Amino acid sequence: MQVLLNNTNESMQTPVVGEWGIYEELLLNNKEIAVVGLGYVGLPIALEFAKDFSVVGFDINEGRVQMMQDGQDPSNELEEGEFEGRNITFSADSSEMAHAKFYVVAVPTPIDANNEPDLRPLIGATRTVGKVLKAGDYVVFESTVYPGCTEEVCIPRLEEESGLKFNKDFKVGYSPERINPGDKVNTLTKITKVVSGSDQESLEQISKVYGHIIEAGVHKASSIKVAEASKVIENTQRDVNIALINELSVIFSKLGIDTYEVLESAGTKWNFLKFQPGLVGGHCIGVDPYYLIHKAKAEGVNPAVIASSRARNDEMASHLALSLMEELKQKGKKTQGAKVLVQGITFKEDVSDIRNSKVVDLICELKAGGLHVDVTDPYADKHEVEEEYGILLKQTPDNDYDAIVVAVDHKQYSFLDSSYYHAICNADPVIMDLKKTVEGKVNGFQYMSM
Ligand SMILES: NC(=O)c1ccc[n+]([C@@H]2O[C@H](COP(=O)([O-])OP(=O)(O)OC[C@H]3O[C@@H](n4cnc5c(N)ncnc54)[C@H](O)[C@@H]3O)[C@@H](O)[C@H]2O)c1
Image 1 (cartoon, rainbow, N blue to C red):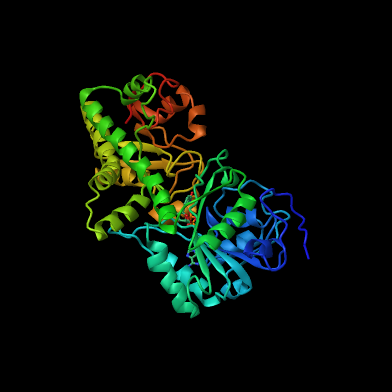
Image 2: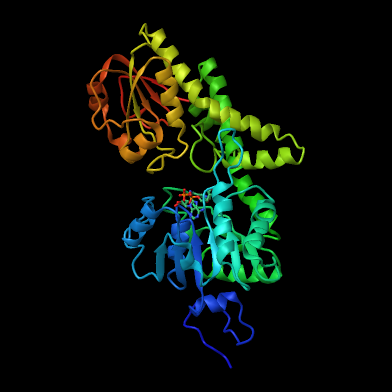
């Protein structure tokens, strides 16, 4: 007997009863997909699955769950209407996932105070899944980790909690996420998704499930470790390249050369890579390399290039603060009590995400140097900024700043003109324009950049 499914996806073969895999069961809405951790990564994937599959979204944060039940994205990333018509329930009660067959784990993987992987959220989520795991279930991890983490840390805990046997009773996969906060072009379904499985069958089934929602298609990695490694090196490669440019910018500022002009010139060669200097913050690039560093050291390898790049990028905030203070001194101004306005506190442009923002380090360094620092940001949530960093965002700037730091390249800042900057500054101010947001558009100021 053949069962026709109401689906137009070409990858979907008409399943024959007895040959069904988990994909077909999910598609018939016989079984549910559970997404564990509904943040920047988990919520979009849950909502995308919920177009054609039955989904339960689980998160330990009841406040966030309440917002999602009301059709709001707590991370402010999704467009309006993304919740409409989706087959999804949100819950902070893990027993709601008891009927699921396919678990997707997308919880945070931060680092601790010693820059070591903090696997507590991942282990917690794994144990939660283990408690409701049943024979025949699949678990796919999406959180960024070091190669080996899924097999060494997660699978034993799934077995321990469930009493089931890995690859006999349940299967596991790893499929890293590549979305980029604030990027409205390279969105979830438009980015090739790397998938992997614990055996050939799981690789095929997991590929079909993701292939159903990812327009760009899936790339089948040969193993879970390969998929884990591929994700962590994407961000490590970026971190190392930016570190080189940051180092060059330190050298060039000593030489009195404009780094951006050098990059523009070198960039005319066909194979020159176009990276820019910058503060490397956020949840991914400034964090993920530490996972690789941890694993390399555990295996007796000294990851010197990766570690020194991380250190270089982390030092940039302090370097910039010292440069600004030096510049003020050169102008004959006292740094003690000098007033600075920092424009932008989010970790990158045009997003509200303040996690691991290195602008905060810059603010702290300036304050430690005795400067009075005001901060504005059109995107950041003032309550979150206060709670996370103890910084009170200012709504309206004063009119007596000695220096302005345009720290984040928010679109709004490019609309501010000379009269705005003249109105808020004392005589002979400095504008530290980290991303060249203002320079060239606003005249009559002395500029510093990276
Ligand atoms: N943010 C990105 O753009 C991005 C891109 C690619 C990969 N990643 C990776 O994806 C993973 C998730 O990142 P994110 O940015 O979505 O994190 P996030 O902080 O936005 O969201 C994580 C969610 O998980 C929930 N959570 C924490 N512990 C939990 C548990 N034990 N059980 C259930 N829910 C739990 C939190 O309440 C939160 O809602 C990380 O490993 C990150 O490195 C993130």
